[in-house]
Image (cartoon, rainbow, N blue to C red):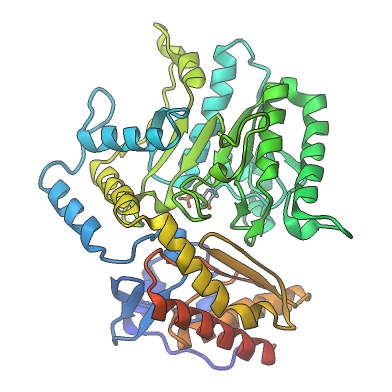
Length: 457
Ligand SMILES: *Cc1c(COP(=O)(O)O)cnc(C)c1O
């Protein structure tokens, strides 16, 4: 099937014996190399032989400011000598307080209460439980259902998987899951003759409204990945969708959850993706959800950390003398000081380096470099938002798509790029530190890899 069989390095062979790798059919490594990383510097990962790979997908979208970032390293070393961890029930510490304050300030204190966990899926579980329990405490115990979008991805624990609509991850576990309502995605690629992306977004909002009209009494929350549904293959939509959904959730008394685990932390051009949507009936005020989930980039890609931010209204629904009306959810490492300190150092870099503006220049450079690719005869739906680029290879046969993505991954490695297409969708999600030469290298080599792979497809 593939051009050649790859010899695995020593470390890779030991790993394949003892480490069960994530999101992997282990047998594929009979023909696909497992890369033994020995260290990272900036945007590059190096293997034991000194071969380097540009981390063009930020190591699963987490690394914002490069590997071994001197400022984050320094903050962590200082924190390590002060406090590595203490439990967060009955105790608190400076890093978790400062981080909560900084993030709340970025929402104008609309989302002023932060609840911490360690990974994205747990943040989604927390948001779903918090929504249900807040309604229950308010005397609306019948609100037990959730709504998600076609192609949604919210993580792979049992609760998060129930609001995930990616067949590859969900189907095997279907019998274990409590079904959610799955409504039309506002994916701009669904545009019919003459429709704009905003038209598709409005059509999707109408579909959501017809569900809410019938079922809102039983629905606790709608959960959405704002602007880009990443894991399904970088499906992008018009911000007006978020404005419409906010208005619908208000009208039908349903919570709105924004899962900004992938799109938050500047990835789409604003710190929170939802800042690009204007609330209806305001002078361009952002659309804020009732609950927002953050993870991935928040610690700069250093340590597992996630959190859910919410409003005074939801917080107050739990505030009571009665223990059982409290939100009793907990994880052992909640609010880990090292992870919070890495997050604070990450937020400081956003300020010190004026990152959101600098990324606009970076993004223009990469987009210009990809111009030839965007117009390639075998490229469909070239799209970009902030620091995300994606396009679909014109390959319709499902088996050919799988071959394409594997071959692309290998060819990219040969060109010193870490890129991992989702089926026929190739995407770039680089860290926010690429210099001019790295932007050009990334664009030129992605183009060359694509041309060589489609030539042999
Ligand atoms: C990655 C991701 C998750 C899950 O986060 P994990 O840390 O992998 O559990 C949830 N939602 C979105 C949108 C994601 O991209």
